[in-house]
Length: 255
Image 1 (cartoon, rainbow, N blue to C red):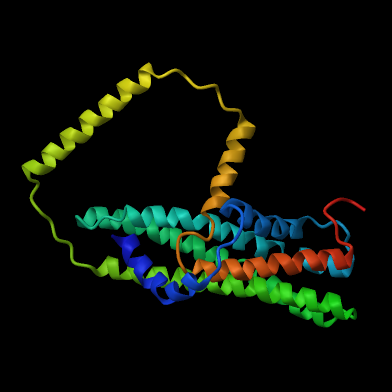
Image 2: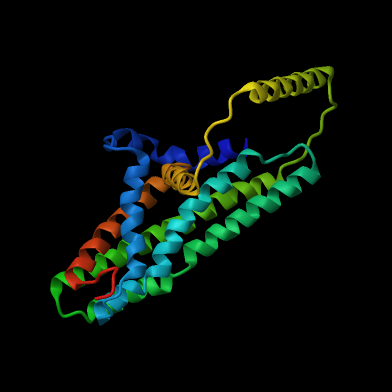
């Protein structure tokens, strides 16, 4: 219920614009990887010219912007399981969602001063093209982090409403008991079926890591409509970061 409230509050304003957006080619994981990889490269440059060092200094801002998007599905999961059937369960749900929101706010704020410092570094860059790319990268990344903070605040307002909502309890009925028995018998049946099923080949650690990373990429920018604009900002940041690194001769290996 909480997730539905948040979705309505955050998705409604952008629904029409979303309908006009042309579909992108490729899977969501591939699209998102094209954003994640260039921003991860920023923190690994080794050519320590002043220009490259300034770009690398934005590492914390870029990495926390990505970490924010990895953290959002955890908040969504906790919102979907938000309970209002008693004061105790609501307090437990509030504690989890408040921790999620605190983590998001911290990630949105982390590294913003370093990202903004790129503007000062850009003004001191004599090469016009380098200056433009560095400034565009800084503006796009800072814009994404600002939107992330606004999203966290928007969700926090909805959670605050849930925190003040009156708790109403109901008496358990025989229907609830029957539903519980059905769920239990179904679980036993599934367990028995699993025992007779042949064991699959063991999965390797590399395969497990690849599956986990694919799922993380697949779920990025997917929970709220507002994330579409964050994604656009981070996509611009990734594009300008790649160009800026090429112009400056910044590489991810020792020169």
